[in-house]
Image (cartoon, rainbow, N blue to C red; front, side, top):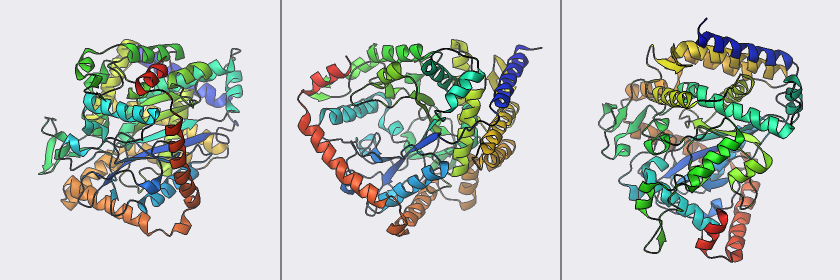
Length: 527
């Protein structure tokens, strides 16, 4: 028997054993999920807005629900952790409705990939006020622009935060006959999820990738190897997510970074080393130049969040606490999946079916065997991701699995078979809709024309519209839809108004409380 079949059979047996042992367990009550969704504000002519973050949306530094990412024009919506998928999507819908009523005639872009960019100067840096922490956030973003270019930073995505019920962990530890520290057991198995997403996350790009084409203006004269669809649009005939390709977040500068998820200590050590190891190219950029900070430092990573991973282990950090310190002190609390494109076929960029499949997939990654990842496997995983991003729907495409070429379709069937089994366990424990979602996306695997990437290209060909015109029409329609919803239908309206006012007050308090100058603040932060 080949090593591929041996490993696959062993993984399947482990999955089946765990599902049998957990039959009847409640995997839903007490689980939490939160969604972070990015969206550019654009002007009525389709260019990135050059206006400040709207006052009515509160302080981008301290508002719990509405902030900005890289650019002043790149909104980021954050739902709180909620106990049900439906509540998370509804909260996101309420945030869109509230925001659209406070951006005047601007439009919220409905795609992951931006459009109509004249130059990098058109992408304004996010501003967070005069406090040290606010200055640090802006400086960090300025550094990202110098390091990777501002175009990449104008890309939008969906981040999905998920944790299983706290009551699940003692039961799982018992089924695994593990008598060690409960916190260590939990962190170890969340890291197993991280490793398996690194292995199998290409399937989510195949099923949910929605950026097979980009506006020519995004390339800024760079060669891309893409085909011309029309005078303003280039595309990959079988691409799924150019956002996750080397045109987007997968770039040469970060490809050389190896951050292991084999143990929590290794993960923390590798990130910490990257923060403390100087990069010669970044040193050439300079740190403090003519009295202005171009970046926080010249290290491989300025801070932990600069590492563009498809998934991160997370722990809510305390005020002023670095993410890795929080992980080291108190262990992993949840995972943050960062691989999802904005879905252009839904007004909020994600729907309940997609969310339910994602959760069942993450549980599949938890229950399946997750051995350590060697350097060779890490490179194979990166190649698989790049292949699926650029050519995922190509007939007969093969990926590298356990050192052997395996047909994407065969490997995908094996994974989805497991996801369906997990979804059935979820539905039997009081949840609903998980099995239907898994079966729906099983059909998308068999028929790639059902995937968002294929549907988007089909609509561009059918309408004859350049990507910009199509995206502009869609974005305008969605923005108008939210503007026309009566305010009384927004269950969170008063909460958002109160949070916006309170966030301005919190920012003012932070600015008044600073006692250190900025260089001393940075030094203390990294101690």
